[in-house]
Length: 120
Image (cartoon, helix red, strand yellow):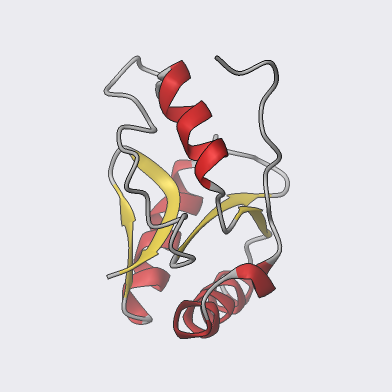
């Protein structure tokens, strides 16, 4: 169906203002904890969501698909993915802190996709 992976958007300005403010505060909160947050993805076009859903990508341990729905909050501009510049997706403590900082700003991360931060 897809010839190549649709482009990923990582521009924070693409997020809805109601979420963008909290997202920026989360990034700052992570920096204040000594982390090196990198915005991996923000707004997601429907074509990219369909591509990710169609390939059924899974987490490291083969759990449920990371992209399990076509109704992602990325499409609505109220979700973003954050990883560590240095460690990528591999530092559990980074994602533990991300969940805590996100909660302080009315957001949450998802257990099966810990880099994903969304408006609660």
